[in-house]
Length: 170
Image 1 (cartoon, rainbow, N blue to C red):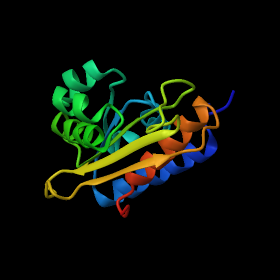
Image 2 (image 1 turned 135 degrees about the horizontal axis):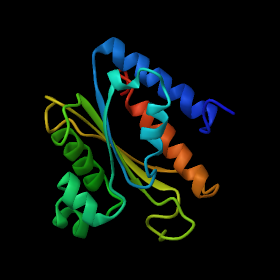
Image 3 (image 1 turned 180 degrees about the horizontal axis):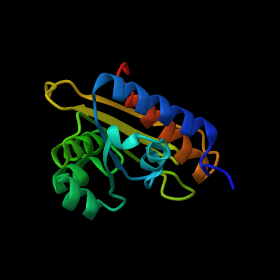
Image 4 (image 1 turned 45 degrees about the horizontal axis):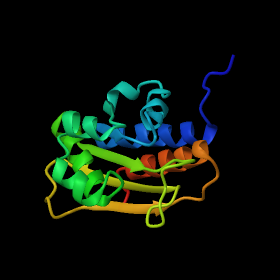
């Protein structure tokens, strides 16, 4: 029986995240929508991840984004669930609901349906919030991943989110 069912590149990057954040004395939290817990699962595959991984919030529906992470209805109605504003609010919410030093949020359209001309399948938005950082220091990005199936989009998104959790991430 394999030690993990997750892709090797995902687990390898998660291990780098755990080791680097342990060295930096940082804890992390994740707010996930389209990845549905994949980032949290990758982090918890790593022995000793409890030193670093504090919390994972899976807020797939807009109602849960509002209820658990306090994303405002105005943000969701004005910008949509797949937007920099929503991802930033999710990351801030994850920080506020945890004691983590840094939080990353992921929201997007994994497919096969749900895309539009402006936000096609494969559109994923990321945001990182750091405790004590200036509110003006917004780290957020919208990416358009190749539509290589739902699982492929989710994997690419999880890898990108893990990169943002590295202490030296831009």
